[in-house]
Image 1 (cartoon, rainbow, N blue to C red):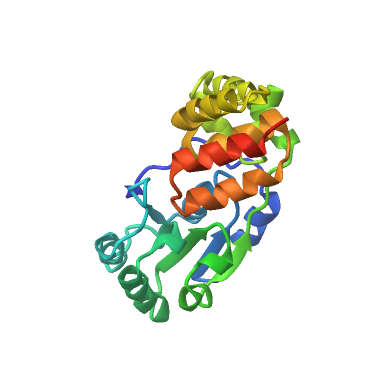
Image 2: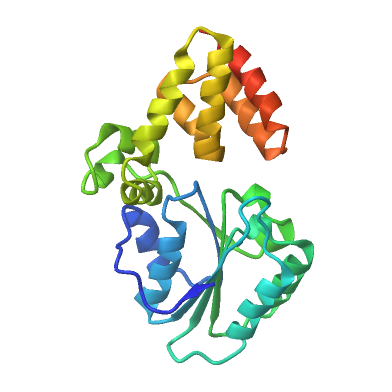
Length: 253
């Protein structure tokens, strides 16, 4: 869990959302939008702006991420005590990853929340959240930030393209040094006309970039219908060697 002192990093973009949230009375909000766009930062800002306390809950495992009951119980225990500030705001980053037991425990809070408690659910879209949770939350949709708003961070065209309007992605890329440029160079090697060499290049890329490999292939090669199928296969935990062999054949120039 993340809590405590405010981050120095400002909110980038989302002026309309910030203006809306200042006067929004809803106790439970659902922040939807792409990863890195700023949903978590705005949730923290909401607590900072109103003089409240903040606690963030997120999945710990990367391979098969989920939020279990014991994690939610920690959040509920925190919300059950009177705040030192004006209110308490709990953020659940990955509301779509709650186990059934965890979601049911959270639902009890949503049905009868303490007057000082506010809750922000964070997910890619409303559709992937359990309907009984989503129906009790007011959705606030986050859209990609205009590229002009990111120019204060960098003017590197590759990094700006990689960010896809998500300040968090761009900040992470800047912190990682030359990683994005290195992975982009790996993705460009897939242009080779030889299928086996394409397979080897894909294998090297996926070893380094994992699930992000498809994004780098799009940057290096442009759009291709095979990329959407590859993402679906990765989400379904298809054997990676079979996936890469199939992709090497489909990307025949």
